[in-house]
Image (cartoon, rainbow, N blue to C red; front, top):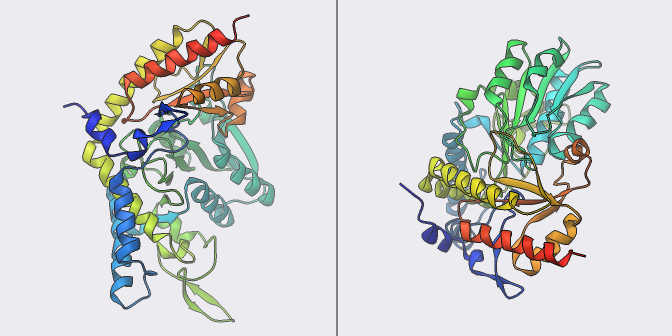
Length: 407
């Protein structure tokens, strides 16, 4: 069975747009994916017909919106195979999910002199929250390095963990290198030493099937907008026993059971961590996005995206002076590259004039750039709605730019 790419592309209205008079070639999927009309239509339907604040209303509209929000939670639970529905917390995105865990976990479990381990290839949003917490708690931040292929040096983890280590926080897939990390092996190593693990799955849930029970992940976080859903919605999965022990991160409506000036008692999970009016329409949109991806099939998506990656890698490596950063044996559909003598911003801006959207810069992974001694890269990231013809357009575009810089 293969994907019907023409049919799929019709689901994404933006792919028919033109940029600078040229057909749009969208290769910035690691930053955000485009949205199918099925997601947009579902959100518009709720805004037009059912919009009302959720959970505490007794009227029809409130009940309809509440049902939509809680059904989305069930969809997420099934999608990542969480044991309990209340282990699914809605947030604004991966960044907020990491900050929630960092702050709430630290309040409960981290003391002066304790240790947190992150990897050298983390997105800033899985570095800075832990730095802030370590500074506040007088704890120590340790780093698991990667080699020049962009592969984590997992063999070093066992020695990096000590009896003061409380949590390891790392990504499943690197947004700037495309590396797929062996997270199950890493979780097993950490758990053998009674250390908790947070997995940043922002770059993996749209490519790979994830089963949090099989992984035995303590926490797993991801964003809706990289999963063909809306912006401003994300997910924190946490094991029930941990979430129950952790204090709330934010105070306000919904997260309380009873408020008295003398003392406030907190709501049960998941609402204990969902202060204020929830982003219920975007949660509904996320549910629609997951259903859309499931209707195509993650296995088919993964196979096709690997084909695109292999095809693009071969094409781009044939360009004189082009170097790819991130050559791990196990990687997904991200290619970060530089062409000798051409600044990444120049390459990105000139490709844009040809209608080709790529990302340029550090990709919020400055330590990765420091590892390679560079200031940034051009990143092309592929989705199942992309085609080999679009990769040909990128290849030809790069060649055109190269000719412009020939002296």
